Length: 472
Image (cartoon, rainbow, N blue to C red):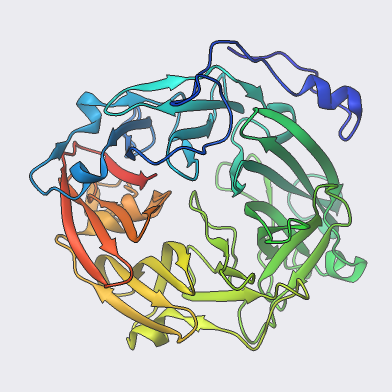
């Protein structure tokens, strides 16, 4: 069902707020009470998700399947899961951006592209292929578009974000134009996940200084919002770029659009900060450029978390090797802190964090790739001691973890499971990581973060152009 809403919604007004609640249907139930609401029940299942190819054969681009197993099944290497033949299809034309509740009893998704792109859905997890769509649908498309970037930013709170930038030039179109200025715009929507509805929304110009925009700085994508421990601020990762203002525009290879050369970036890693719940007072904070200039907006996986100490730990994913820290007291970057995975691993090769999860007391788990080394790898990290311990898995050297190049695959680029990995499961002392290279059978790995032991768990049956990409 697609809710028809005014495209010209008045952001921030009471009228628009009521309109954007979307469509809700009765009859939704929770495992214990029969009423939809927050996840306050004991965990019963670990849900696994996997992506399959689209009609053109692009790996992992056709949609998402889900299958729920018990913790006992998860750790059993003789138990077999084939999500593609036995699973439940989540509603999304392309690979869904799936989120889970604290105890795994609910899945959430905002459909990605297509006719129903932007529609929020909530599912009750009942084991195996049994997922109940609660029909508590919310249309976020008028705010976030048909391909929303969104995450669970705090327990029961979903936050979706969107950014775009527009360059002003003279003349306004065509090749040979001079750069004049650039304007970046952000949109934010807050969702109540327990009683699905949009509770807040806003749109604003991202607050660069006039000198910065004249110098070509802009933000064209934002993602992975997180709410701080005090629930007073939202921190949003940014794809910060710079246009070379000294050069004239050109035309792209298709001859259809104006293009601009990239300029040399001098600003450090950037985070957009707004007050919560008002969504007011937008501000950009920057890491010292000598510390990091790598973007932090990630790709389909949450990469910043509130630590046990109240500070926010933020990975420069998915190309960087660092985890930065935002101070809980100042809400600014702590430039005295730098966790560098390359240094912690003691490798001479550059490494890139593909996904990670903060666990507790400074301990986290990281999925990473290493330059010049085929495959993908796991490591437990200690953010306090700034150390890392590699974890051994089977098939870790397979190219399907990091993606095949076009030359390796007959001209078509295939994104491996690390390229789209979405969520690392956590229940008690155990971390759950499904690993299956593109088109190759794999396993669910269960890591006890306290003992640092890793167990090869359930078998994951795979198929061509597909991979498992999340545990919840």
